[in-house]
Image 1: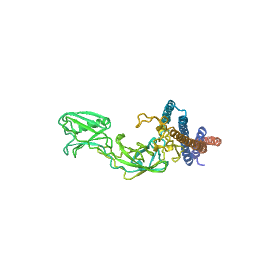
Image 2: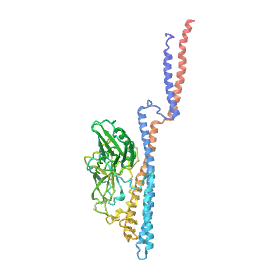
Image 3: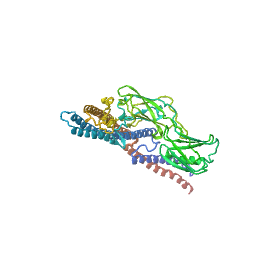
Image 4: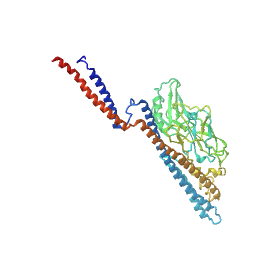
Length: 523
């Protein structure tokens, strides 16, 4: 055979086999030391994709399980508050039965019963307001809200009911319709006219004096020196915007110096100019408080329409509230009382001085479906809506149907010496029988709320919690099948690769000896 010293193919081939054995040994040692079959995507690309998908889903399942456990805690917290309210109502019912025993009741006893009734009714509201979880109220109606449609959310921020002022209620699951506002929303303003194209650096006044600016937030007196420029006056007013709620801007093209409230609607605005040569001494042009209607189905299934009026005293003047009750023309109102519904607009303007908000061009809808939900699954659709009614005294007893006679809720049983006319209280005024009806209705409402919360916890949340536990175990096992190494198999592979490495090493040594034969020819 030919003998060469420059190239030894036997050594090269043997070295290649040794490298392959070395790589196999490295992989086997990684699997044995880590216990994982998949170290990198090259090990099993398809298997790694599936294993990672399972891992990510299992992480979501574990978090959903934590959410479900927290949901149980929330419901148990609410249950504790409802139990205490029920205990107070049980005592109030006993008082009502005692007050109905007219044969032996005397004024002193009735006064004592009335005092305890007043305290008990107030304590119900205190318990409801104090039953919170992570700072969020549970029993004051915040979890029984109204959901705006996607189109409505473009124009409005929220539609909030005050259930203590809705004795007729709103039918669960029903649709509400919000009509367009009666006109464009604007702000009150005062304008001072300079000559068109007057530069902002021009003097606003040739004399010194004081400009008192009063707006929806407060009032401030601004000292203005003679020769102060128009732009400096604008800057001075805007610098106090957070104190007064008044802003200013100057349009050089028209020469108009405009000062306006930062609140929409006819909010307070006053400018008093002293010694400034009539600067901004013109009349205030008021804005108009707009109106719109909200139509809904009450708890009895009857259609109702409420007129809401813009409230300039609200933040930014962006809220509408009903100023009247109904459907009766005068109190007592059986379905809604003033302040029952509050609608907040989104500020779709650019925020500049002179900007306005155009009303929605067409009616938009909302629905009496709650939005507060627990995420109880790893998928977006796996949610459980949590609704708890308003259990404050002013919202309990509505189902008695006595609002038309002036007894809409438990709050109407309390003595009110400052009322018009003054009210001595249900027991002292001879309304103990009405009180008993309201208390029985309130007890039934609380019991229904407790039953609904218990059913949600026992039949839904806890069952979901059990299912999530099983799902997490199964997903973990499935991921182990894909990702974990078979230690027995890897041990056998280790023994095989070790023999290959030893054989390759030995043969490499032999192959390296072949060129040594050339030395024998050269001797």
